[in-house]
Amino acid sequence: MNREAPSRHRLRYLPVSIFAIVMGLSGVTLVLRRLEHDAGGPAVASLVALALTLLLAVFLGLLYLRKCLRYPDAVAEEWHHPVRISFFPAMTISLILLGTLLQPLLPPVALALWSVGVAGHLLLSLAVIGSWISHREFVYAQLNPAWFIPAVGNVLVPVAGVPFGLVELSWFFFSVGILFWLVLLTLVFNRLIFHGPIPARLLPTLAILIAPPAVGLISWVRLTGEIGVTGRFLYSIALLFLLVVATQARALLRLPFSLAWWAYSFPLAAFVLSSFLFAEREPDAGIHSLLGWVGSILLALVLVVLLWQTFRAIARDAICQPEDAAAAQAPPPRP
Image (cartoon, rainbow, N blue to C red; front, top):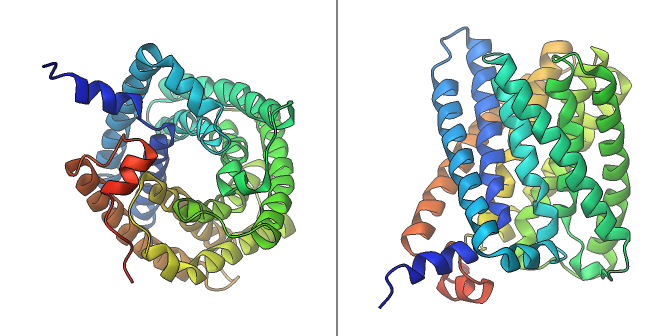
């Protein structure tokens, strides 16, 4: 009997969406760095989080590379899937985030990682857009907030791009990201309102609605140096979508755990960072600092739940399984 068969089986079903974990932990690390800066304390927690995020990113990157070499047909199947294709840019977004995290610590290494991530993200974005406008047929039932992921990566570029001195390149990616965010926002809301409810397993992706405007505010301040009318608009939209997701909390909590739950982490971290940035630039504007602290507490709770549920799923061998098998092993929704 071949003892390696189960391992190879799991590798075949390693989902590209698993890189959402790296995105989420990167967002948490940025929030920790911001809290340490505001408190004037030593950068200990953020450095530990950065080290863990880097190790996980390397591990998952090598693991998915192994999948590409051993099961290219499975990777092709993911690429041609109408939902999973949108998660491929999560890999390049992870590189962009890692470059952003390392920018104040190791600028040359950060620039190399960031540059590879940006170039790869441009290619993946073009490929994803090409698949959208090609001869492939898509139906509204396949449209979901995960389609925002390529736009999020584009809007994220100026956060480190401006400090690297690449201002015009940052404006290009910011403009492209905002354009496709607005286009997809219209399509997604049309789908949610007029074409039936989103599948239960994809409900956590609703949190992705928060990310483009929240990240957009941070990039806008990087590019212009001020909040202004545009910054207020972006922050208000991010807050609105946070409230929309909060109204769905009861339905979301009844869902069995899946890796899709990690979609909560990065958008929430982006909202926290945008809140603190707004409070810093406009100290008399209102309750933005309070919203940042409340969001930080919520993010900490979400992170604990995500880590606990992920380790439980690994222990039950419920990760890296075919969708039907994973659903069969998941505990039933709570009443």
